[in-house]
Image 1: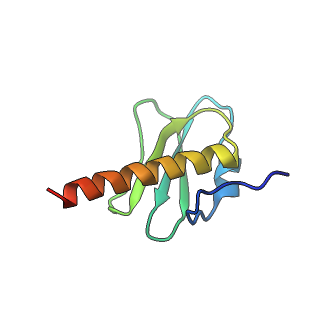
Image 2 (image 1 turned 45 degrees about the vertical axis):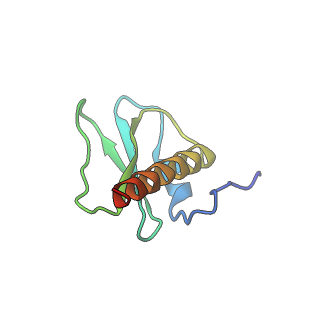
Length: 95
């Protein structure tokens, strides 16, 4: 089994997050807590629905997937979302 590349980012719950994604009629929202590295998943049944966290440390990785995602796919998306969040924060701090 190939080792998952987490891009140097702490990711807690990656295996569980992958297991929570599946091929189904609803969608699974994936979020990431930048304060502790926890990957969060929420199953959404209704269209045009989502979970909104009220912590600035929690970012949305994907608003919803209705297919199974591997641990590597999720790790890549988390790394991309963290990179984007850091870029935005740096830009805002430099204004």
